[in-house]
Amino acid sequence: MNQLINQNSGQNRGGSDQPHAINVNVVVNLQQANLNLQTSIDPEIPFNVFINGIKEQIFAQRMQAQYEETIEYQLGNGSNLQQNESRTLQYLGFTNNCTLYVRLKLKGGQ
Image (cartoon, rainbow, N blue to C red; front, side, top):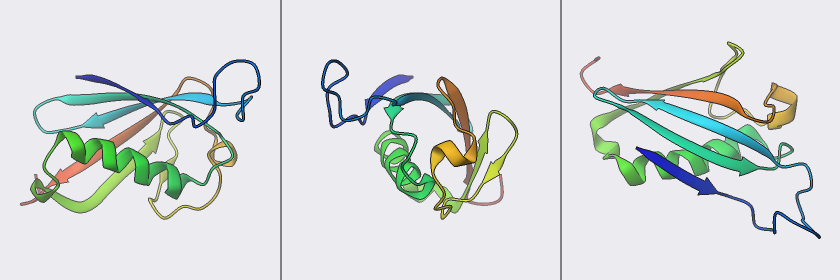
């Protein structure tokens, strides 16, 4: 399942409002399969704003009721992140073409 999420509000060429947007690959670990998302995003936005958009995309694909409230986030460099983290993506170590791993916990402790 590959989805392309384009969260740029500006254009990618010429007078772009986001001249330094980065591509972020998001791998969501589900019980039966992985969901792969890719987004182009301004690295100056806070992580909690970014992750709310990602969660909307995840739960557009899967039923939210199947999963616990706990969702684990890990950047490809090994950093564990909390969904309420308000520091910017750039400050947290997000780089162009980096990967964010998201693990959803099924209800019932699986």
